[in-house]
Length: 524
Figure 1 (tube, one colour):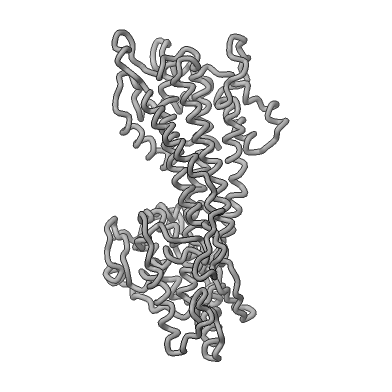
Figure 2 (tube, helix red, strand yellow; figure 1 turned 45 degrees about the vertical axis):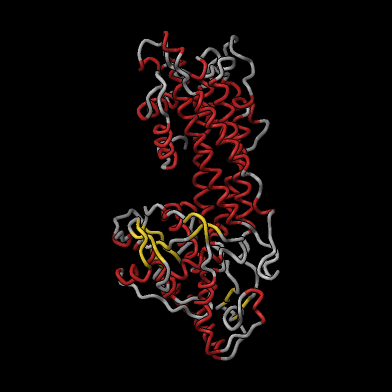
């Protein structure tokens, strides 16, 4: 069994000590850092004050939503004092109705991290024991099996988070070392005792935005890398097409000063050595998918700062209901479980990402078409002589990339506009934030597939453009600057040039693994 508590790691992510960043959640999701709950006396005392305040309210017959009442529309139903302790267990039990694919181990670690971080804000009225139990799941890599479908994003991610609540209590199943195990067995063998949830703790675990926020952190990390990789691919495509590098001139972009767009243009300018004089025989204006690449990729680059702000704000918020104020001893009933900011962030991100898929698909169409690729072979076939007649190069790959692009574009319909009235019209306006986040991850997956196809394409296009050189090293020297040569060399080490038709699926899968591992260092 993996025990992250004893894994050598360069650092720990400490919950309750400082605000978490997206990078912390990503590192935790990949089990690259150690999770730890703060042992600060001040932090632990704050958590305890909230739990003690709730206990005192119960003793004094306080009326607390979800503690002495039913849930949702049933808030008018008073729960007898003798049954208050049973109520949290009923909450996770009847919400055990998720369907769809299970969240991956990486996604599940991120979900646990997001929920734990929200509870450590100190406004949820939970016990220290509950926080330690979630910490223990992360440390020992005991990951609840959570179905991905069934949340409308308000009152938070109720159904998927019910699987976390159940596992904390020794029910349902966990992933352990890649295999499903009964939660009771896994906890016992890890030396952990199943919890008996205190009043309000069922709501505190489930009534929040942890699932959508966790997925948003993972989506942000992938989208950030994609802006850089799409830029490098564009530089290689421009070279392969014998394009006009002066489209990325710094003075040109100074007059339309979107910072992200300028940054993308600057990267392209560095890659393509734009200080070289423009040759008159070159096409004066390249087609839009090359010339306007900074304007397309730049939309995502410029969106990343505010996307980070929204996601990290949600990540470091108390987002359940009711909010327990231990300092002023108040119970505040509100709607912080509503995931509207994450929904908007994910709907926006998937639009910008899908546009990058479309950009790369259009670049690929130019590269494989003998009418538009400035003298490269049709379909970028590397075959010569009489065998050229039976070889078709990247013809089918371009078809597949077009299919993936179309599917990505189809998914850009915003999920947040599909609010449904649910739960006897108590939840009559909901965020759909989790669906938006899941859609965004699917758009990213499809766009990464298009990106893998384009990596094959630009590697092939650059190789063909430089093939007239005497040897491979001389061919690399024909590339402007050092960065394109280094990228071509890295791709060449991973995938062979297509000289004779071959099955490309293994190359594509290997490239997808490299993309998701962010294997190439691109720009500072």
